[in-house]
Length: 333
Image (cartoon, rainbow, N blue to C red; front, side, top):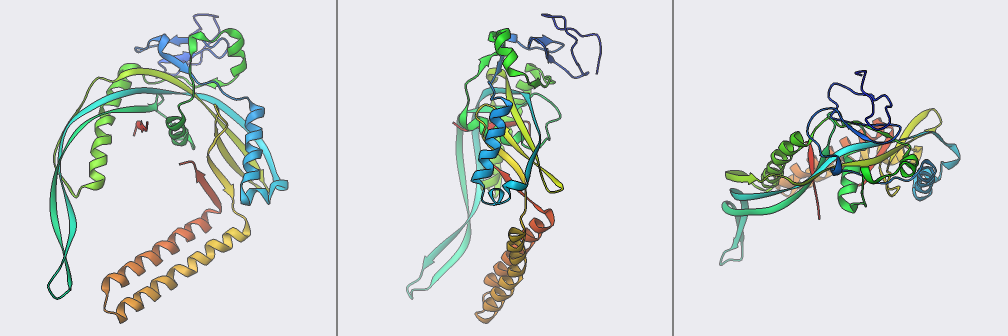
């Protein structure tokens, strides 16, 4: 951390790294510009629940969960941590044309009632003209568990925000959470937004086309760009000798991602899946061979192998992973 930086409002020392663009004072909450371009009036904060409310949300989740409820007496909360993370939000208008090809199966029935199918190439020409609402982290290291889930939940509910400068000292005192420093300024964010808006459209067509013959889509200058501070809480809890954690959105206490212990009976279910996979594959392959259908045999083997591999991975993992559902992610209206 670089030393010597002090808050412009209260004079408190600031923790600043070489990449810090904005440092939020941990004492008075004032956003201090270290470098880069950023308008202070465009920084917003989403109010958070307090630590006790998050603890209650955790125990409520335990009561709702079929497995956790049955081991409630063995669950012990080890720690509850919360922080505010900075995200850039904005909208980008994209427009242009896309030509692509899709291979489709075409069938027809002849005069004798027999159906014949063959593959044809169909060509399409689409016009793109839409506005994408985007959100992305303002930090360069954002690989921690639950970050993408917080973004996804925010994009669905769009909680109320307040300008950071509108918080008085009393309101700031209620926050009492660490605010992670911003490491990407508005200029950098806009560049990434334009690039990712194009990538979102390209990915959309890549997923449904067998070949893209022409991609001519451009992105305008991002509009309504603002820095939003989102609260994220993590509850660490212990079951016997293992530690697990659940991530909550601070504004409504919604659990968005979790790792959970796997009870013995659940492990037995997964083991049954491991055994059942090869049986399904073998039975399907035999049925296909008897009826002269290579496709049925192949699909059965793939299904059985995939099923066995999936449940085998779950057994080895020893815990359940649950979730609520590039730089920037599109927000769905």
